[in-house]
Length: 324
Image 1 (cartoon, rainbow, N blue to C red):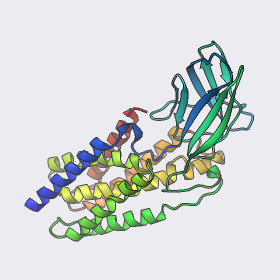
Image 2: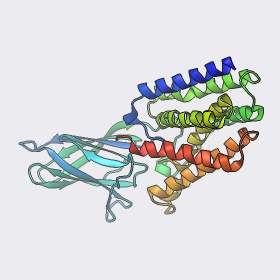
Image 3: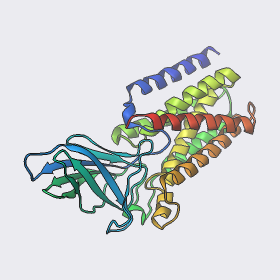
Image 4: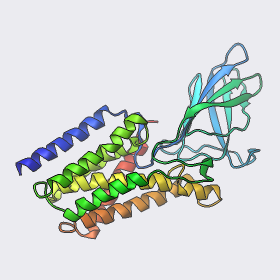
């Protein structure tokens, strides 16, 4: 019992440290890595006006005849400061335009442009009556997965991660024992849990949302375990490993470059909230099933459904409230 208490204390301290040192402004829960655009302005006019406000128009055709402003929802938005603009989205349309208001009283529109990079960088030349947008070299897509042709082809490198997390989760769930009875299993699970942290150091942003999700959901799981007197080491390990699994699946299936976006490019399932709601429902049911199986001696499926709902609502809701 003393060993288990020490293990629990170490887990809680580790999660608290990660939560304090990680830059919260760069993470969002349960939505996977999100593409972004940064716009740097250069001027061919004098005096140089300041940027007052702007809109990023999203279009499905090269002529931008169906242009719609990029909707603001949670972390998705377009924003400007006095000298630059940027955007982040759950997913973008195929074509884009800028419409920017300046302090000289003029509203200037840009040419239609596309994006080749996951974290795209653009130079915007401000002329007398319009804007010229040219893409610079941007950041690559996350290491977690790769899509060719902006959804027209699909090659996934997520399989090794999925296989590792699934195998470890199965082993932990089959054993379903205390720390003293399955010490090696738990140590293996915790070691593999460090993989997202290591990958995020190599390529920041790949697993940033997962780190925040783990902090929130494991804190709630700890409170639930203490309240309902559930086996804490098993519960916290299962919550950690199932998030590694479902986060990878969510990113692959429902992220900006995922399967739903692939079908969206073919004309099906368009709309950010469609993808989010389907994805969150998928994660809720999968995680409820995992909890019910791993804790089959302690909880019924009804309780697993409720716990999974609380965990996901908390992490997703808090993620939407985080600053851009």
